[in-house]
Length: 435
Image 1: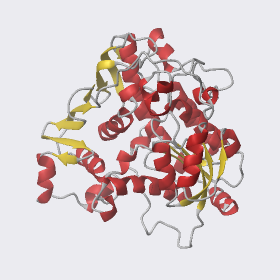
Image 2 (image 1 turned 90 degrees about the vertical axis):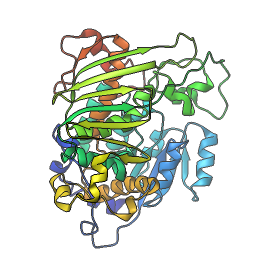
Image 3 (image 1 turned 30 degrees about the vertical axis):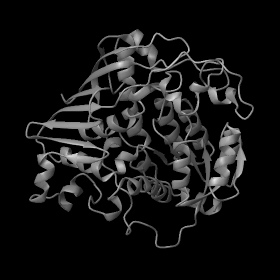
Image 4 (image 1 turned 120 degrees about the horizontal axis):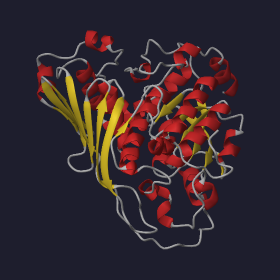
């Protein structure tokens, strides 16, 4: 498998994997049956890193297209459970570097907490692996700048798990907005949901099955709190960004895909918990973004989870359960056509396999494997996802400085704003730096 995969990688076309700034936001489509190679393709050898919760889900999805030959997790109990659940006898590791060193691994899936994503993708790309990584792509904006450069230099295919890009509801909403079905887009309103409150939590001895030092990675070395790790890591700024990067990596990505521009001004408000040794992400938060094309986007933690697109001729609401609005109802008499789709390089919206959430997620992984084979950009490529999660980070930064900030999307800096620019990166613990 490794030999055949490497031979296919040799005909990588650099131009196909080096998107321009806005090109990364184009409506890319998976390969059609006609695009796929006529010969039988060997199954890829997959190594899965981070195997709890969503990490386990993406490992199982990858099994539809490849064979899991190695697994890695810093929690031995998780490793043992995953090894049994995956129905094979993969080699298992505590340190992901040992997995990346294996020559029999072609593709890596990453389902770790957010603060490990960028470093692991970079190391995997430099080890010659293609990567499927859970969202959000980065912990900071500067991490995305480094990652973009490494992916371009190595020519690896990287798909980010922002699977709503493969869901028929969200794709239809984006196509309709960009196709003018609500007239000129004026405003986008997003509801993400509340961040979780909790604490103070009790310090405990580190479990014998858990490598706490390795789990912390680049973040400050602190006493072990059970609530810092596993699923609840997302409620600590040290490891994540709360709902702004959790749900935001999904909904802000779809919104920005439809807006087809970047923000230039962000104004945000938030309150912060005062509890010591407790969750520290913002509460009661609200952000307002003004885009270069004058579209205004708001992000709130209160209301019906989803995205409302408002134009001068109508509105469309979309979430994981529905796509609604009069323009959607009007499709019965004025349907989207192949000509509409071709304008935006868009895949068929009525394919049966897009009919449900589960199939949509499967297709997102399938799109990744198609693109590995063809050496082309996947639907959630690094450039588009760096830009989307940067928008999430911008909201958190505006909340933290407590005032309106100006953003230069070309330079990717806050002009003349030292306090905001200082938050583009974070100090990293020695030995775990992203380089």
